[in-house]
Image (cartoon, rainbow, N blue to C red; front, side, top):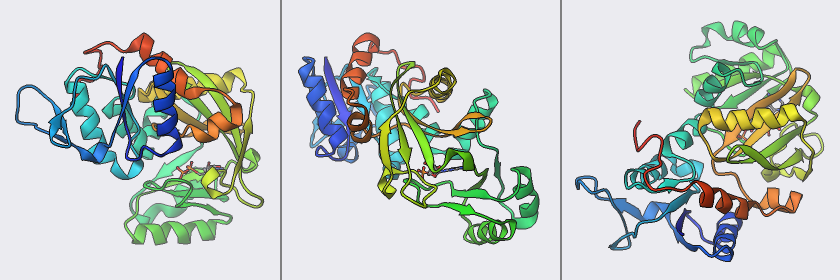
Length: 301
Ligand code: ADP
C-alpha cells in the first residue's frame, strides 16, 4: 500500500519507526511535513499540494499531529478524508481528544471512569467548585497544558482557591480535579490499536513528584492490566473515535479512571518499556481496515 505519515519531523523516533516498520512490511511510506501541505479548497476535486506538486493518492494516512499545530493539522487530515483516503485517526476525533474538557464530557456521558472534575469560568463559586470534587487536596489543570506543564497540586482549600483565582484572573481555562493520592505518583499508559490494548506501561514520577510524565523525569516499566483497566482504555478510545491512541489511566480506590486520551502517542517510551513492535501493529491495523471512502465523518464538523 501507499501510506503517508503526517509528521513535522522525520527524525523523531516515532516517525522513523513508522517508516521502517511500514517498509519492512512491503509498503511504500512517505513522510509528509504537515505544515508544508497546502490545499486548493475552491476546486470540486479535493487535493493536497506539497512543494509545488499535487500529492498522489494514498491508501492511508497516519496523522501525527502535535498539540501546537492542531488547528492546521486537522484541516490537512480533513482534506485527505475528503479525497477518500483512510486516515488512521480522523480529524474530528483528533480535535475531540485535544480538548480535555470536551473529552471528559464525552467520556462521562458514556460512563467511563473519571476523576471527579469541575469546570468554571467565573471566580464567584470557587469554594463550591472545590467542595464538589471532594475538597483539598485537588489538582488544578490548565486546559491547554501538555507534558504535565500547568498541572498543579493544591494541598489545602485556601491554596486551591488562590491558584484557581489567579488562573481565572489570567483568563485561563482550567479544570479542578479530585487528587488521586492512592495512584502514588504513577499512571498507566495503555496503547490502543483498533479495539485492543496492544501494549501498556506503568510510569512512575520522579521522587517527590506526583506527575508521572516521562518528560518530567518519570520512569517506565511494563505492566499487566486488569480486565477492568483494559476495558476502560478500549472504551475511552471508542467513545472519542480514535483507532490509535494512548489512554492514560490512574489506579484509584474507585477503579481505573481516565485522565487523558492522546491521539498521537509516542512510540519510543512504550516500545522500549515493553519490547513490543507497536509500529508494525499500526500497519497491521491499516492492512485490515483501510478502504477508500471508508471515512466515518467524511470531513464533516
Ligand atoms: P498533561 O496532559 O499535561 O500530561 P495530565 O492531566 O496527564 O497532564 O497530568 C500529568 C500527570 O499528573 C499525570 O500523568 C498524572 O501522573 C498526574 N495527575 C494528573 N491528574 C491527576 C489527579 N487527578 N490525581 C493524581 N495525579 C494526577
